[in-house]
Length: 221
Image: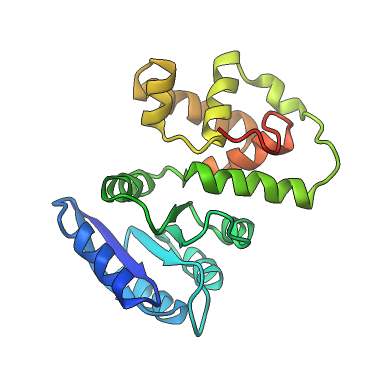
C-alpha cells in the first residue's frame, strides 16, 4: 500500500521537483500539492494524505499555522517541515504546532525517500543540523541550568544512550548501526523510553533530553 503524500511549497520548482522524485518510488504517491498554507489545509482535508511536506514560509498562511490546523484534524497526517536554512527560527514553533520532523530543502533523494517512510511509519525525524538548532533554541528559552528529572533515572544505561542518539536526530536504523544491534531492538528501546518518560513521540524525546540535562547546548552530534 502506497504512502500518500502532499507537497506544500510556494515555489513551483520545489513542488515539481519533490513530486517528480517521490513519483519514482513505487511505494510513494503524491496525491496533491499546494502553493500556500491555506491551500495545504484544504488539500489535506480533501485527500487525507499520510505525510505532508510543508514549507515553513508560505503566503496567505505560513507552514506553522497550516501544520497546527492539519494536525488538529481527526486522524491527521504526519507533517515534515521543509526549511532552506538549518538555523530556522521557526523550528520550535513548528514542533509545538505538531510537526513530526524537519528536512532541509537540499536533501538528497535517498534521504527524502527514507524520511517520508520513517515519518509515515509513525516515527519522528529531525535532521542533525536542525536538531542542533532546536537544542540551541531551548538553551535560549531556558537559560537556567537544567535539573535532571526523576523519570530519567528509570531508564537503563542502554535506554539512556538510545535517548542521546534520538536527541542527535538519528533514525532507528542509524541508531542500530551505531550500537551494532538490530533495528527491532532499537524500536523496543525507543518505545520503552517514551512510555517511561510519558512522551508522545521522538520530538518530545529531544526536548526531554535537553531539559533533563542529558544533552547540552553545542553538544550536537
